[in-house]
Amino acid sequence: MRMTKDVRWLDQRLSAGFSAALGGANQPNMLTTTQLIAMEAINDLPGASQQALVLATSIDRSTLATVVQKLAANGYAERVDNQADMRAYMVTLTKAGYKVLTDGRSKLAKVEKGLLTEAKALVAAW
Image 1 (cartoon, helix red, strand yellow):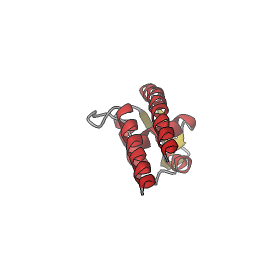
Image 2 (cartoon, one colour; image 1 turned 60 degrees about the horizontal axis):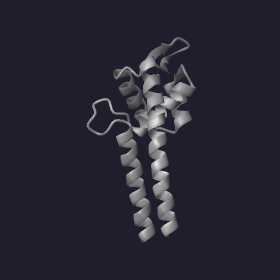
Image 3 (cartoon, one colour; image 1 turned 30 degrees about the horizontal axis):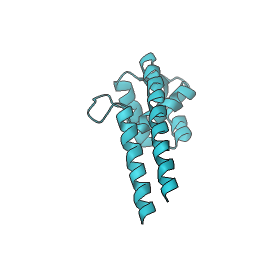
Image 4 (tube, one colour; image 1 turned 90 degrees about the vertical axis):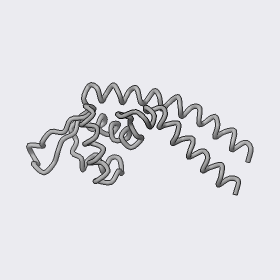
């Protein structure tokens, strides 16, 4: 039972740490980890369709559509009609989106390092 509690505690710390690193829950334009994952895929596949991003990230279609919509509303991504397939959008990061992505990467790396230290201490205690 202790291991289950420790794993749950670590999961909560990870979620809280990432949330705080990405802007905190009280920030209007705060990024979620799902948004950051989508931004990584958009950066890796510029001009990809939302369907291609679904396949690349394993984020379900409706969630990804909401994420891309929010990123576009915040000025972090652009959706343009795909001339080859008018049913689809092509998605790219804006300059502001790329800056937010690179800032998010460095913040998450610091959180990850701290949380890995905590995880190692927990494992050593088991």
